[in-house]
Image (cartoon, rainbow, N blue to C red; front, side, top):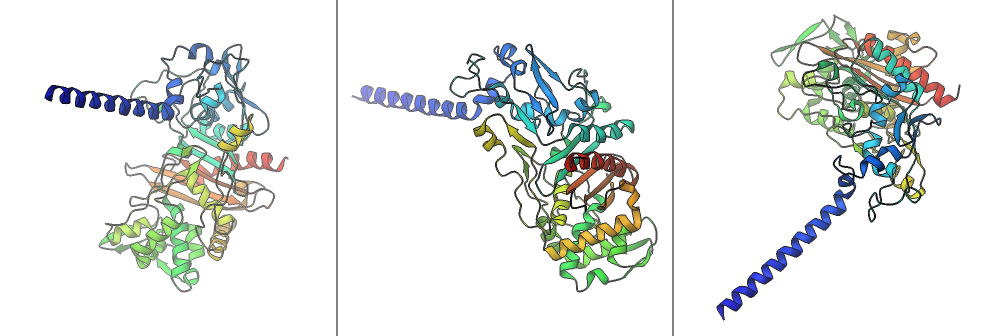
Length: 462
């Protein structure tokens, strides 16, 4: 009797283990089937991979990638190919956020039930049209390449959410991929789309958040004058500025990027208020572009002393900012407080795929600030350009902007510029970060100008 009972329990246990294992496999199959189908060891890929995939176009119908006679080919212009590499991708999947990685199965016509086994005549491959402009991307890339810059550039329409220009460097030609070896600094970070997946110390661009917090919480803060003597002691440590600015108000302090002014504001506001405003502006929060999550921007002063809090208010301490997120902040300022959700899939040659890939794109996001605060920041940013940088900095465009020079910690400085175009027929928000670029006005600004001028032609049509 005991033997029968033992055998029965063993049989039930094995049956239960079988069905648990079967269920686990079915769940994994449902979740990972598309990824498994695209693994390099899949023998089908030699004949059914990107060599027969749908085409990828820019917003104007310019071919960025297509399949001809079983081969994947790219745009004729090497500058365009390098400029859009991180957006389009190459034949592999090393650039995880690229269209040819993220939407590979739509391009090749993968079917969950039949996999890649459908005959070509029945396979529903999709062409994808992007919101980016190939010429705008190439214009920004050419300036980056001429100066051997590494970093990120993004320009997007703050009314519609369309990403017009997106460039990450270093890059390479997908028609002639380099043989990259470990330790080769030339290609350090080459597989990372820095617009979406990188975060840098924001430097003085963070002063926009400190200014917003002060405007809302300190009586007549925008009209208050503070003394900058070039350095001051906060919490027993020196906080320094580029030069003594004397008695200045907030408008002037933002224009000349005075560290002392905004460091003292941050300490007066305190860690709780500074954290609240940083998080209202999207720090420590997740955003996405299509199916790609952005690298989080970080603001953390939980254990900061007075000196660290002061430096956090000028974009140092442990502050980190994602370039796409910084462009979204500028979008919110331009839009009266709310950012527009960015996207870059404009159209897919299937209604059902299109509705899924672009769902939620271009919609208004959570309010970052009041319209009153947004308008004050916009006025100050416009003053910064017109009265300090000079309008000629952006050619014929009227721009509101803020530059930044961020100490990285290894003796180098990243150069930033963020802002938006105020011309009504050209609603463009932007962010540029140049690694080891030093002053943003000398490194990032020329790249921004090239990207904006070409993007303006794309948006305006002339």
